[in-house]
Amino acid sequence: MARSVVLAGAPRCARCQFVPRWCICAGERAVVCPLQVEVLIHHREYHRPTSTGRLINRVMPASRGHLFRRETPPDPATFRLPGRELWILHPRGEPLPAGAAPEGLQVLLLDGSWREAARMSTEVAAWGRLVRLPEDGPGRYQLRTHEHDGRYSTVESLLMLLAALGLSEAEAQLRLQFELHVYAGLRTRGAKGKAEEFLASSPIRAAFPALLEEMHRRRAAI
Image 1 (cartoon, rainbow, N blue to C red):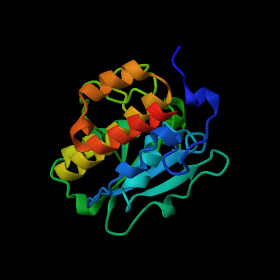
Image 2: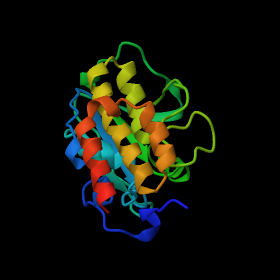
Image 3: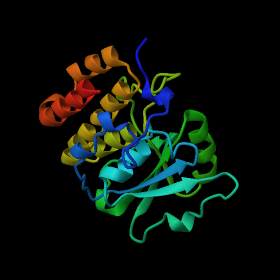
């Protein structure tokens, strides 16, 4: 059986939440774009190392994270920014509007399990414009089980939105951070075979060769 440090309760990096041997902080690169990103993170999700909402907040300096607790509903006034239209990504929203300028937008992303995100959506649905993204094939987020097709992680939803808005450079840079996150998560869980299969088709092989070599060297030294 593969060894999983998730179950073993090993110490973790305070920033990326992975164990030191698979820490990805050295590969962190700031992702800058004109779209204002807001992440509403369920309080149970906040300490999960698999959270891609926290990944967004780590690598996008201008993004903002907000903690959700059902007993203390968030105030919409803390989200809205002057001069920007608030979009809320929602599967029952309208099709993505054409021709929108990222400089005039802010997007609210819901980060949690599928059930937690559904509960949060009932609290925020009236805050802004509900917008849905077109499905983009199977996702690359292999750290949780997808119960239905068309469900994507928080960061994958943002990646699709960035691409749709023509923010190709930001999309490419954020995708590298996401793929590195998934790979480290798989290795942390001891899923070596699945991780190697993931890495074989990932752009991080070319983008972070030295970091990957160092991560594997750390593992071999244990």
